[in-house]
Every structure is written in structure tokens, then in C-alpha cells.
Image 1 (cartoon, each protein chain N blue to C red):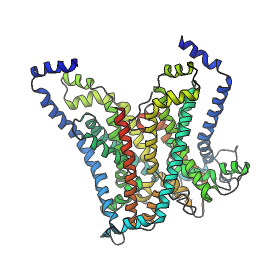
Image 2: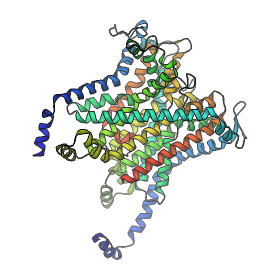
Image 3: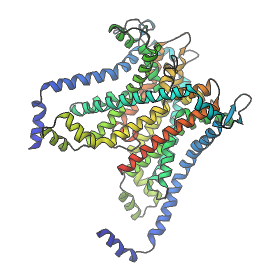
Image 4: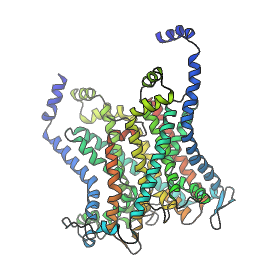
Length: 307
Length: 286
């Protein structure tokens, strides 16, 4: 109220400076953005147009790249392809399993670390290590650990009475690649949640405990509501990356055994670079793009709510 | 008053919970560290120990795996060089362009700014498999397959939008009054940015640079399609040890260690800002 009247009073006395300055500011920021945005446009809009065109074409690679118009062939084939839909189903199960486990374990880990007072810094550093490991190394290391003749984890399972080839069975292979992803990315969820927990006012948490509310009830009524925004950020960040990366499956099972782990990016890759059916692969790529754009929209909306 | 009760609380609370916390921490540490320790140990084992049917806990460490990686006709040096150049250049170019554009974006007053931001973030999040396809055709037409510039461009498809978005988030955290007082003191807009704002953003610059480096260094998907004999990177070298006839796990664990160790050190160096960096500025930590 007061600021509004103030502005009204001072406005007429001010020279027409601000307007001029605003215009100058615009060109300055525009000039700074120009090179980056130009390169980004080259690296994203051009490929996007190419991807759309490819999805309506038959792409030939031999004897120079040639595109020939195929109309809606790729799209109608994709929509009628039961294999592709089963890949989507596996993708959804894979996303559900990895994101679910990572959120639950990550939140649990953060609550645990939050309770540790001595040496928390060192502990957190150690817990974070898997995040920096290249996913392809996670996959290869997973193969080393689960190998049926010399794998450490295979040996452990053997001692406990479970026998068989972990990456050879359909269910166990799926569980294994899910757990490799969980191993790598649970620390990220824990890290984000921990940042949220540190921002919860300790006295509100303390008051809850003093009121006689049990640990679980104080979590449910005080802690989770106040960090729900941050948890959503963690979920969306993980969801976007889980659709992006497929390195782990690529080097462990490559979609097998019997298509058990053939999630959608693996199928795309197979169509593009084994069958060289790039037009069809582009159709799958556009479907994936729609999914990530929806997730990104959610992410931006959460950010806007924070501001 | 309440603080004293709070201080007394942990001791009053049965040691049972403390034991439970301790046990859970140990389990979490084992789950996290055993694979890494096993990889490191494997890289120092001889060929029979590394694939022994029952785990070998104690062994005489040998450097054979590392020395054989760096000797012979198919040695690792060029791969290491390609990785360094591709990841390093992609990180530096992205950081420079991203810092300028990020500052512009943070201070821009343009009307459709949110559309621009959304385009930038969706570029960062685009599925790699969907990006590779059109780039593969474009690179073939432009003769960029199996070249380091091609790899650098490919890595910039995700690092550049990441750098723009993240630097913009870091710049938004700097109070505008600092920049305004520099302008009042007679600085030009550029001088205010270069001499005042940029030195205040060192943490942001280092974090963004390190994360760009980690993302590019760790890439495998792009390199499998775009890299050839004259541009293969370390992750490709690792996967090439997997052959039909068998896998040399000693060498593989050694390459794994070489790939992982520098990134762990770089990542931990910016731990304080990791939350901000990895959530693209959505969450600020500590």
C-alpha cells in the first residue's frame, strides 16, 4: 500500500530514464544469450525437425543417406506393433520399480543420515559415491558381481540357497538391472531429501515430539508435508533421467533374456542400429520425447510454485 | 528450556534406537561400497584370483592389469586422450556459452521468457536415444562420425542446456542490489557482470563445470554410435573388453577404476553445491 503510493508520488518527478535503461538492458541480456541460444537451436531444433521428418520416411543409409516419403507407415506400424507395446509396458514397470525403490530407500536413508550427528559429512560422501560411476561401468560391474561362476553376489546368493544364472533368468535379470539402477541413484534421492530435512525448522520437529507425537506421526504430519515439494523435485529429476539412460541394460542383458528387459530405448536402438530401420526408430523416439516433455512440464510447474 | 530437553533426549531415548541406527548405517555402507571396493580389489588381483569360484579376500596385490593396459599395440593411452579432449572441450564450451546465456536469461525482462526456459530444460531432458537418431544422419552428412568435434557437439546437446539453466539459477541467487550498486559506481553492464557478479559466482562456475565434465566423461550411448577407431573413449574401451571369447575381468576392473576415480574426486570436490547442481537449481542445500 505504502510503496504503491510512494511510487505514484515519485513517478512523475523522475526523468524518462528507466524506460531507456530497460531497453538497453534488454539488448545487453539478449546479446549475452545469443551465442548460447544459437548453438542450442542448432543442436536441438534441427535434430527435432530431422526426427519428425524421419518418422514419416523410409531412411536408406547404403550409398549415401536417402529419405523417401513413407507417409504414416511408420506410425501405423508402431501403433499396431504388439512388441512395441510390450516394451512400453516393461518401461513403465521398470520406471515404477526403480523410482519407487529409489524414493522409499532414498527417503529412508536421508532420515537415517539426519539422525547421525557425528561424522555425517564423511558418511554422506561415502554414500554418494555410486552417483559418479559411469552407468556403463555400473552395468559391467553388475555383470562381474552376478556372474554365475565367480560373481561375489552370485556366490552370496548361492550360500543362502539360491542357485541359477542371475542375468540368465527373465525375472532375476529384470530385478538385477532394476537394482543396479537403484544402487546408482538412491544416493541422489537421499541427498535431495536431506537438503529438504535440513530446511525443516528443528523446533517444529522438536515441538511435535514433545507433544507426545510418535516418530512416525511427526513424520507424517510435520516433516513430509513441509518437504513434499522437494520430494516431488527428486521424483521428477529421477523420472527424466530414468527415461534418458539405458547404458546399464545395454551392457548387461541388452534387452534379453527373451526380451525381459527390453525397455523402449533398447528397442529403439535395436531398430535403428541393428535392423537399420531408422524411420521406425524415429517414431519410437518421438513417443519417448512426448513422455519426457510431459515430465519436464511437471518439473517447471513445481518450480513455478516454489517461486 | 526446550533445548535442554532436546539435548537430554538422545541419552534418555533407549540405546536401542541408537543401535538400530548404527546397524542400518552399516548395511547402507556395505550395500554402497562393496561393489566399488570389489572393483578396486579386482584391479589388483592376478587373473586366477579375479575369477576364482569362491571369493578371494586376501591376495598379493599386483599392478599387472594396469601395466598391460598401458602397454602393447592396443593400449589405453589414445582412449584416455579422446575421453579427456571430448569431455573437457564439451565442458569448457558449454560452461562459457552457458555462463553468458545463463546471466542473460536470469536478468532478461523479455516477455516470453518462460517459453525459452522450458525449451532449454526440455532439450536437457530429451531422451538420448531420440537425440542420437537425427544426429546420426546429420553427422553422416557433415562427415562428423568418428571425429572428436562430432563427439564434443553430441555432448553439448545435453551439457549446454544444463549449463545455461544451472548458471541462470546460480545468478538468480545473487541479490540484484550488488549489481545495481556497481552500475551506480559507474561500471558498464559488462563490467558489472565481469568484475562483480562473476567473481561472486565461482562456486556456481566450478559446480557447473564439474558436472558437465562428469556427464560427458561418463557417456556411453553417444560414443557407441558416433565414435570410431580414431575417437573412441574410455567407456568404449571398457565395453570392448567384453568379447565373445571371454572377458579379461582384471583389466576390466582396472579400466573401471580409471574411469570412476577422477569423477569421484571431482564430484566430491563440489559436494556442497551438488544438490543445487543435480536438481538444476530447484533445491538449494546447506
